[in-house]
Image (cartoon, rainbow, N blue to C red):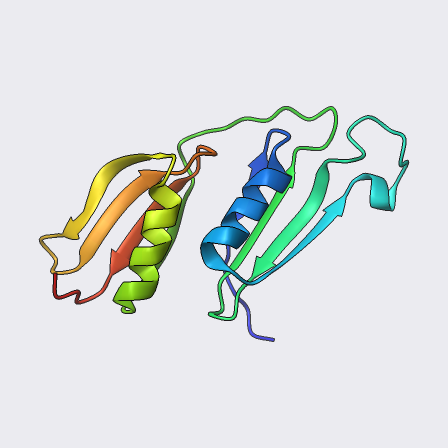
Length: 137
């Protein structure tokens, strides 16, 4: 298997909901493992997600997990997930679903470099950048 780069997002107790949302957005196969599956099933946070992985037929991969019990969740604005390519319909569909219920900071529209580009923050506070190469819009 070749090396690949994919985002890994930490959540503050809502990793299951977030990863299931991304599965609805991108499709694919979602695997979720809880802290309790590999440890004490009665421990605090045993039902929280220790590791989640979404893999799509299009080759996208997204990982996420809840913060382990006792570790502080420190959200910041230094993470964004970038989606880019030339499949207008596919990328536009992702954009519509990701921005639904979130906020748009840069509308998906033609930019000075010739591509369509937009930025949004989804309903879980994750920043997304979508770039459609050579879009005719």
